[in-house]
Image (cartoon, rainbow, N blue to C red; front, side, top):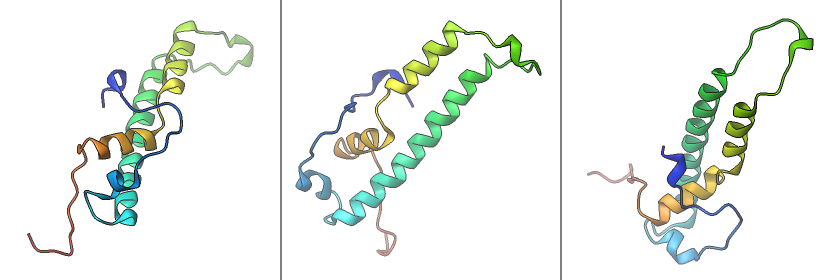
Length: 107
């Protein structure tokens, strides 16, 4: 996922219900699909953050040797400023970037 080019809002906004339900015709189904995508995004971002923070990991047993690492702080601040996974998922849904299909209907 390209975290630098996200267009999702960082704050809570109100969406048009018809825009959310139009791809499926069912609000609950749309929310379920968006929620599943938000979980995927959250997992991806978490794995990416852990991978980046591993670069700064020190494996010392002494608590006295803790020091501030400005680069680590900058990485953490960057990920804190990212839009929430649900906002990203809703934005992807509205842009038609999420593939979904009804498994109860034959293809």
